Image 1 (spheres, rainbow, N blue to C red):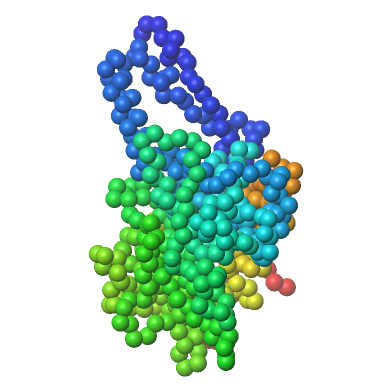
Image 2 (cartoon, one colour):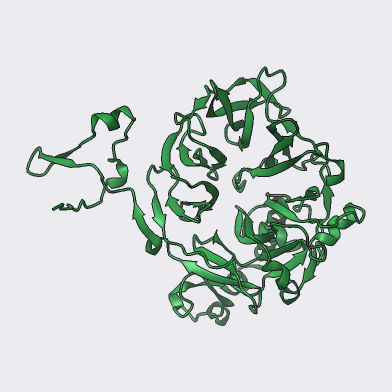
Length: 513
């Protein structure tokens, strides 16, 4: 065989932490430098030079087009002015909510945005933290974007505060008390990108500034809805889609609530109504999501029928100019429970699974054509959904801090034991690890990261049977179970508990005395 070349024995190996215990070597992965395992002595100079050229062009294309792990544009931009956590922590600890956003194609990159319940903080900024390693290192940085926004507002930014943030495949979108701000296209890195460049923002004309608001005798609630998707396998790079719902409360002779909905595509300079033109009746729209695979708009709304409220889902096709067709793509779906109060809608990335959540949770496996009840809450309300695409996990968080866990398209759920600790939030990283993130003073980044195990957190699930089962043997190896359902339950539409979820499970008999 001959002697092994010395270069073939060398490799530039870097170990990086993967998950769980840092003291165990098995929890680390290795990255090998390709040029040490493919030396010039093994390949002729022309072939190696051509290979390097194509590889560099491919990596450059990744950075520009948004493909692969090296594509995250946040690596090449600064969100604002860098600030030290020790200087801003007195303001951070006054926040009431932590919002975490990430891009689906590179979920190890994430942004944390603290939201304040009051904006009487004239000396504070609009602070954002960026992590490039899924919080597995202490290299996270805090930025203040207030100076950028104040320049756009010509200095009229007193008491400006952040309300929400969305990270699309191309833009950072900030919803503030002074309007909606959109970054430039972050994928436009240029020929020779230089580190330290700050993101430029522009103000959308969709939302008026506080001084221009026409509703002087009311208040407004604005919400942003973004359909997460990764276009790694789509060379057409579809435009980012964002919908905005605005609920206006007016106090004149009587209290009146008006819901309006708009949608737009990148660069979000033009917006359209979520209802097609010349529609006789426009219901109160809660949210609207874009189904990229079918090019339809999934609209969640409610309307009054005989003094009763009914929630419904409508699907409408888009025209080539991205306007809505008046004809519905499918028949509307009406939720059977008139007491169901919907709060929002979420589409699991790159699937047809849609969740409608609120006082109940319903799910659809056909893109919103039909729905099935998953979870029914009592005196509680689902306000947030977290997804772990790596291990297909969906987590619901309620206003009472109850946490429920399921998988896409599964008609079962489990309750999780997660104890709230100060100002904290949950996040799922690119490896499928669930973590609890808490603000912590005197830490290098102002954060405390605690990894959680989903299996250890399950306190109870609904896979058991609350109704009696009758066993009948068909043969010596086959048996049939009959589940008892009373006439009253049958009239109320009771569902059988047996499903494919029980395949491979062992039934344990419970004795009652």
